[in-house]
Each structure stands twice: as C-alpha cells, then as structure tokens.
Amino acid sequence: QFESPRPAMNQVEEKDIDVLAEDQARINRFSRLNHKRMDLDDKIEILKDSIQKHNDALEEMMICMDSSGFMLKLGDTLFPADEDYANEVVEALKKKDEDQITAYDAELETVQEEMETLKKTLYAKFGNSINLEDK
Image (cartoon, rainbow, N blue to C red; front, side, top):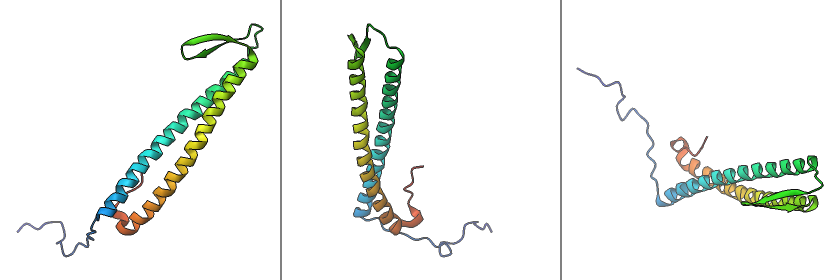
C-alpha cells in the first residue's frame, strides 16, 4: 500500500479567508500606491542628479572665470552670457528642481501614510497569507 507523505486534510490546519470585493479593492489600491511610490522615488533620484549637475556647473563657472563670459546651452542652442546671468540661470534651474523634490516628497509622504494604513488593515485580516513587502 502506497502512503502519501502529505498529512490528511483534517490534520492540516488551513485557514480559508474569504476575499471580499472591498478587500480586493484595498489590495488593488495598495498596488497602485506602491507603483506610484516607486515612480516618485525614481523622479526624486533624477532630480537629485540634476541638482548635482547644476552644482557642478556652478563650481565650473567659478573656476573658469573668463572675461569673455560663458556660452550657455539651453536645448540645442548656445548663446553667450556673462557670469552673473549664467549663475542666475543655473540657480533658477536648481531652485526649480529643489521645489519639485519638495512637492514629490510631500506626495510621497501622503502615499506612504495611506500604504501603511492599508497594510495594517490587510495584515489584520489576512495575516501571513498576504505579502505587501516590495523588497
């Protein structure tokens, strides 16, 4: 007689949990928020890189003071600019990126707070049956 290595169904304690429509909506909402969080993280990293490039440009302008000024590139166009104007342009670009990071950080905080609330609710109902960790 062949005996199965698995215990009989009555010996296994499985907890069937009904997934209601509202639970599925919470899971879907968590997933969308998680994608949004990752997107915001990526955007913030790109802006941080941009700010670093602006800082590098400002340093280079300080080092390369030339009496004839600088050639400022915007898009595909180069045009002559004196040091003060070039500094103003780069500082303005840097400030714009910093302001955008501040806005993204605020949005990210709101997203993370909602995700934590959803996590608590979903883990309370589903326990270890659900995985809401992305790492």
